[in-house]
Picture 1: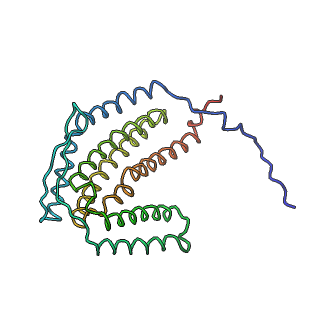
Picture 2: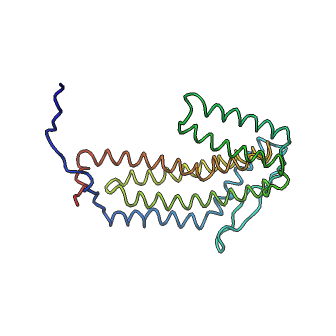
Picture 3: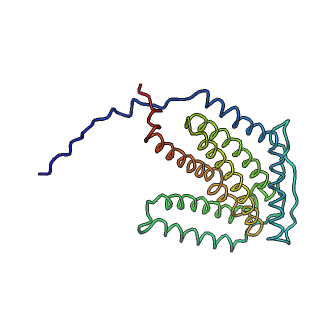
Amino acid sequence: MKEKMKKERIYLARTYRHLKVNKTESILFLVVLVLPCFILLLLNYGTISKWVTDLSATVLHQIIPEAQITSNRYTFIPGLQSIKAISLKSGLPSQEFILWNILVVIVLEVISLTGGRKNKPWSIYMVIMLFIHLINCIFFFFAGKWFPYSATEYSELYMKQQIGIWICFMVIIGIVVGVLGAGYLGMRIATFLSVMTYSFLFGLLRYIVFMYVVYKFSMLYMAIFFFALGPFFDFLYLVAIYGIYMDLLAKRYGTGKGKEAWVWS
């Protein structure tokens, strides 16, 4: 019989320990960095939307020179700046194009649900998104003319959604890193700036891609873009960057002087 392994030391249960919170440092972080950034965003989101729209329109003019691309102004928060978004024409998909999409969706559904791919996280995600696109295709096949959105309205909704995401993410990540990570100011600032920078760049690139596909391949892809690559997808990179931050913090708090940050209940 194998000898039972005996512990030389029995440590206290981690259930009863928590991190010391430096309230002064946290408040200073929120007041000096997060709050000014939040106020600047609220006062200038209209200017940011203008920059995003103008840059996107310039890129789209290069890719699809035949498109008539203009822009419109919309109210987002009453009393603050209006936002600017691209305006362009869009068309309904042909019946043949819809049927090809249905065929591709069915093939991909079968691939995702068979073999070693079955029950894997990416496979489950694919199946759900493909099912949404299948329902969307059926709607367009029988009632496409009653679809309530044009490319211009879709562009307006996207810009409002993106600004809302920027505002929410700034609050969420600002509070999280403001409370957790006492003594590691550089990591906190880096995490805050990483989330916001990635969100701005991803939002810009996604806007260009969405507008290009909607113009070039019809309005059929509006729904799948929103559900597959919309706000839900934004939370994926938010959680990913937050996870990296927490992993680094855990390593710091588990060694050396970092252990001194723990207190027992």
